[in-house]
Image (cartoon, rainbow, N blue to C red):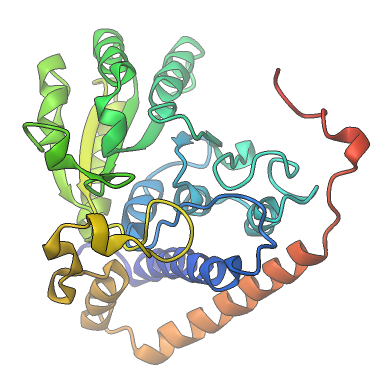
Length: 321
């Protein structure tokens, strides 16, 4: 990889940060103090990091219900995110949104939504606004395989292609819409082929390989920013946990047999470590990074647990009706 060691360590730091945050959430979620549904991104972290590492701070991203990795990778405030999970006034959505409705416009995270496919037209609209305002910004939509079955998916691609908008569509395909496997929903699992009907360039990406995601995302973002129009990446990933909540208690009931075979389970963090070690990074270097991350994460959770809840008299503030 033609990437400086400093950049590789930055990528590792964010990858490990997302992993450790998700594990901490899972560790404490059973205490029932986080009064919000959660959708873990464990196993899918490389896509968030690989894409966002190629974006400018001012570029826009629009996220979905599985949003923790996107929020953190774009530079979202960790303390504000954890406080939001605890529904505290200090949360990034003032405790009104919860895990599925994170936002930090100061770093270009324009919001996540529980509506399947909701990020797609929003990103297209933001890309159109960027063109009209001569901002030269790129908008990115993160969505899952189920969102590719929504009508707005096709409508948005058509409009983006027609206007040559600077938008990048990132499909994180973990093959499950809640409990339904993609093969039970679609006659052809190659989602990346669908945008080609609109003459949108598209590629299939190994979403468990951070290096590959970085390379393909850079190409897609440069294409969009240069005025050549939209780009589409289907990043195939493995969802380690259930659709929602912590753990995956029902996996034996709906998972494909091969998904339960430990020899088929991949770890993007472990695989990226091998790249780092080959470049001269030591285990001690990574341990120092992880220790700092653990301290930061512990502080964020302690602050969130002690922060105030919203004043009941102000609950209707900061809401769109």
